[in-house]
Image (cartoon, rainbow, N blue to C red; front, side, top):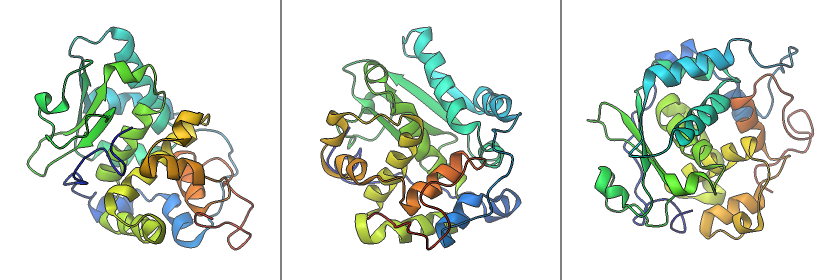
Length: 259
């Protein structure tokens, strides 16, 4: 997807502003209870929220601006459809994004450098997409290469996961993610990629041999992904809190961090 360890050749990361703690308290995410303790009371409902698709689509249409840069209408529909699918299972997550910074999406024409559209010059030329933000920006930004949207079905899910982590998690929640991943993946850029890679797996479960051979953290995390990992439980509960937890059962019942 990009350089060995992130979408930036210099390993830099976006200057995110965490979600305010008060919003986190008002809109708690049970996934972080899973990550902290390995278990949570599971929903007996077992089905997605009835308002999920409508709320997710309303968020996209009110808070996301898509700049097509000549892209066909089908690609714009694809981006919106994937974003709605990714968010529609968790009303609390949608609620957090509703109070977070708005997002601008650029559909980058084939062969064009992302820097031409205002992204950092240190973006890897191999990057299929990028999430980026600075404190002074009114909107966070996502770049998606038009020619990669067809060949990389996980692309929107991956970059929106970066946006979710950067915009919809509190500082304390992100620190918990980093403590969980630190021993295995160390640097922040690598750990951010792991969250996005585990996120994309929930929506595109088929992993190709090409994906598994990807350089650096991209191939490593995909190879290590396991249904029984604690981090899999966390990510699944984030997007699908109404589903049974991933893995073998209750905390202490065999779930590991990464094997």
